[in-house]
Structures are given as C-alpha cells and as structure tokens.
Length: 399
Image 1: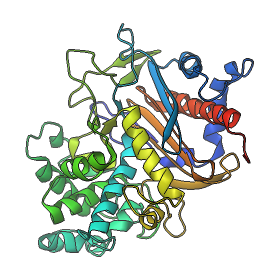
Image 2: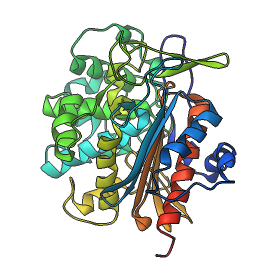
Image 3: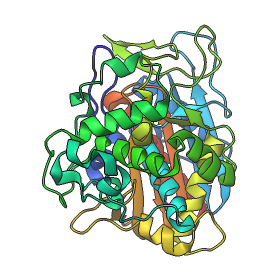
C-alpha cells in the first residue's frame, strides 16, 4: 500500500494488490465507458483515444502505455499533461518514474553479477560486511542475498525507522556512504518477521544494494548503467524524479490536494531518498522499459541470446518456497494469459506504474501515470485491461 508523508514518500507500492483479480475487476469500472464502442485492436492507431478515455474518467494528469509482442512494440501512446493545469503535453519520449518496478531491475543486475562470478546468490550479510558483524543484529548475519531479493530475509518493512532517515533528505555524502549507513542502521533494527516468511520490505533491497556495492566498490547506479541499461540499450533511463526544476520538460509527479492534483518540481521532495535507490528510484521511457520487458519475456519463454541465460531468467522468475514472489516479480496464473504471469506495481506516492508479462501469450505490457494513490492504481489497471482486450482482438487466444 502507499502512504503519504508530510515531507516525503516513504513506501513503494506493494505487488500484492496486483496478484489477485480484485484489482483488475475494480479497474473495470473506469473501463466501462469504452464498452459500447469496444477497446479496438492492437495496432489500429487508436490506443491514444482509448488511453485518453481512461485518463479522463479517472481524472489523471497523464497516462502512458506500451504493448509488446516478443521483441516488437505493437503500440504505445502517451496522453495528458506533464503538469496538471499546464499546457505542456506528454510525449512518447518522456520519462516516467516506475517506483518498485525498480526491484526487478535491481534483481536483474544482481543476476548479471552472479553469472559473471562477482557475487553469489548465497552471499550473506556477514560476508559482505565482515567488519560490521559485531554491530548488527545476529539474526541478519547469515541472511543471504537471494532471501533479501525475495522478501524472505526477515528485514523490517518501514525504512523510516532508520535513525538517519530524516538526515538523508539533505545529505551530501557520496551515495555509497549514504546507502551503506542506511543499510547498517536497518540491520540494527529488530526483524520485521521470521526469516523465510514473505514480508514485502524495501529495506531488504536497500541492504542488497549496499552488499553488491561493498563487494564491487561501485555504486548501484553506476553498476546498473553499465551492466543492465547499457547492454539492453536503455540509454535514456536514469534515477529520481525526471526533469529539472523551473522548466516543465518532463512529466511531474503529483500529490492529491482536495479534488485536484498539485505537480511537484523535481528535487528532494519529489522522490524517495536516493539511498533507497535499489528499492525504487528508476525513471525510464516507454521505449527503454520495453527493452527490459522484452528481455524478461524472452527469458521466461526460454529463448537464448538475451542479457542473461534462460536458466538465470528461470531463477529470477521462480518464487521463494511458500511464496508467490520471485526476484522483483509477483508470480501467479491467469486464464487470459494461458498460464503464468509476472506482475508488479510501483509507486513513490506521486506516480504509479504497472507491468504484466504473459510468456504463453508472448505478451508484455506496461502502464504508468504521473499520479499515485488508488486513482493511479485504478487508472493503470484500466489501461492494462484495455491492452489485454486489444491484444486478444489482434491475437485470439489459442492462435
């Protein structure tokens, strides 16, 4: 769930809401207005009209979506305003904050490092921070990297409990120093639950990011640029709230105030602390995120030639025992998908993003808006419903 904080967003959207049909059923209320004319067919040139209908019905500043078959974009569109009440319209090249969809990106980076032999899935907290073993809780010393990435490491859910959380807002120390300090403070807090039991935790991803930084001596940001963004051609992707203050050159995240949306200028109050990066600070374009989805779609189908081997992709898409969460992906089944789907949602409370990948249908789709909360969740879910219907019309099930 998302939650607003007077100063900053503090939690990223949990995947749980999108593992069950209720979220999509609820979203269909916003889709009902299109039922009379039908959602159309993928590739008919009408996706912008469909999205504009959804955007208007949900009262969103802007809405964008992309539909992928295999490694090809079937259609994409972006509608609405970069900033509510402004004249600047969003474009296909704009950047969007994806919140906790970052988790799958972080897990993919770790997988690259595992294949390279730089780290192992079994790397423990104690091995990554040998000089800190005596200063952290003993329950965490043997917790493994893979457990943290699957939310079964027992770490706390609320990162704001870290003593330095407020100070991180204006901290000018190198990001490696900030993230290591935050990770250590989180490792000094009592466990949020029993190890081995699923408990969605941004803290776990912060700690995992600090662990690979400790091993490599490089920041999560630099590693991601070189080892994931670079090989996939995601040259436009970055970190934090997109754009610059004083010029509306990119979409801005929005806060709900009364019945309206208030845009926030890029800056320290427009996103989570940078130290939280591995849990959810990536921004990207539709084209760049399509490349990431396509890599995971191909990997889930067992196709070789991608960023990682099919075997490693299978690991990334395999839930922890007794859980429906893998490495940055919720894993469930849907009739419309013909089997397993990979799903996640993400929000820093001022944006909302949703991704679904259906390997059996060779389908991947992504929807995002520059507004958070239930409105953002329902709007992006309605866009996903429309994309599924349009895909069905172009590629009927069973064909």
